[in-house]
Amino acid sequence: MTKKLTFLGIETSCDETAASIIRENDKGTADILSNVVSSQIEEHKKFGGVVPELAARAHLENIDYILNRAIEESKISIEKIDGVAATAGPGLIVCLSIGLNMGKTIAAFSDKPFIGVNHLEGHALSHGLNDKMKFPYLLLLISGGHTQFLIVKDINDYEQLGTTIDDALGEAFDKTAKMLDLGYPGGPNVEKFSKLGNEKFFQLPEPIINRAGCNLSFAGLKTAVLKEAKKINGNLELRYHLAASFQKTVNKILYKKTKVAAQMFEEKTKKKEFQFIVAGGVAANKSIRENLTKLSNEMNFQIIFPDIKFCGDNAAMIAWAGIQRFKKNLIDDLKIKAKSRWPLDEKAPYMKGPGLKL
Image 1 (tube, rainbow, N blue to C red):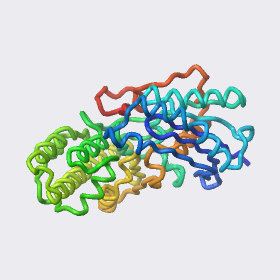
Image 2: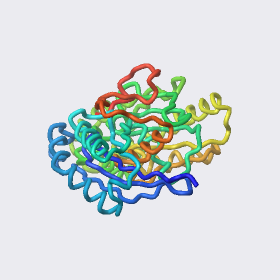
Image 3: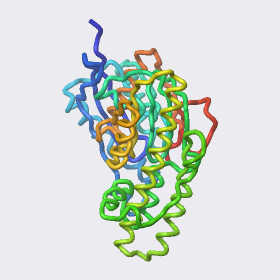
Image 4: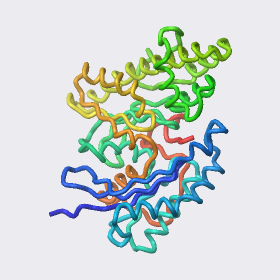
């Protein structure tokens, strides 16, 4: 009988301090023994976004407590775990370094293997915590710093099909919320208030929606929202209409580009039946989930979303990615350094969107 691995995961790439201990199970997924996340939303709310220096200070203040709580809740001692995984990038260097150095220290003192995890790979594999992974699969990764379609061929083996050529979708949500004075964090508030508005009230642009391929663009949409926001002069009802129109436009863009990406996936892999995974913080958006589920029913592919609690930044997905990399013998030495940029497909042409977490 194959030993089921138990890993500690640590995540500090941006504004969440997180630690988790998970164990493989017989279903090919994971048992979550603990999953502790400390959010910094209140600290950054008055600034309308993440302030790196404040985020790093909060990580330093919280990480010992978060780690101890994760260990205590798991009822597993450090001596009993099989390895340590910590996010090594992409992200804010001042934040990444805190979790990465803590992970390396724990691994060194406990004589455990260490895995420096790509935060994007954590998201890419996060559905595996609850659903058995079936390679290859199509991935839509949507978050605050990245928006891209990829073929996930295996652990550490990715082919980018398309990406944002300018702003990430999560950034567009956050900036839209700021322009409409809907509060922070922006994404959830845009979705919340969009339900109170008329999605047909404003006609917003759909940048490069008809261009061949599955690259995406959101800068023009964001600029259009800014122009309309200046005209409505704070009118509450019109702000709701604009939020609704923005959400509808995003849904239309994702629907069209996902359809193209699915066709490209089928052509490249020759697979008619496959998993389509939607992961990252923006994957928690229920309107996007409903929109893409409708497409999956039309095109007859299996769509999977990670649990809501695993869409945002968390350490369970980092521990899971660590286990998968360990099984492929992708083990790091303790000299690994934090990376601000770390695309999943290193061969893909550089654009602003992929591999950055801003």
